[in-house]
Length: 181
Image 1 (tube, helix red, strand yellow):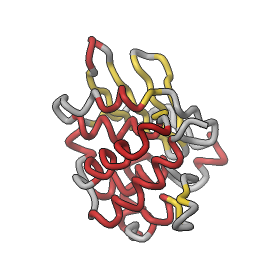
Image 2: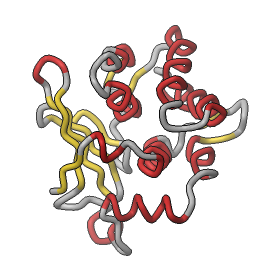
Image 3: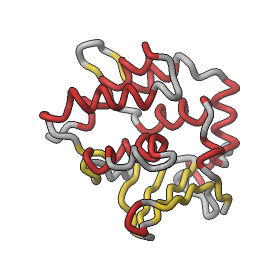
């Protein structure tokens, strides 16, 4: 497997693709727009090719192995309390593990809303906590009473990667999709 570091994902092509893939169906009804549409406006062919190379995508990967590789690119970082986060970035899915136990998936067999939003906020003071926050955000579960503050925090953290106009729209879509039903 190809292990990467947080330094290697500190770039616009990574975050554009990560947000575009992680929030495919999150939608802002009021604005009639989805996260993937908003991100798509910035995704050039070069940015998409970067992601394909990064994840090991090839023609036929979805047909041959449902988009899962035996040797995916992965990120492994320590969390608080001696725990370890591992994120596997497959061409057809992103799988999340803590201490070897799968906690989530954003692909076709999705497993979402597995982490209370407040736990993600607790990561922010850590070194590179903003990256951990954004990486785990697709798995967050958000209560209605947290929505306004969460949208502001998400927008603030996203601004490390994107322009403020995009952050406003995308954070609104994300919050609407993370709300507990």
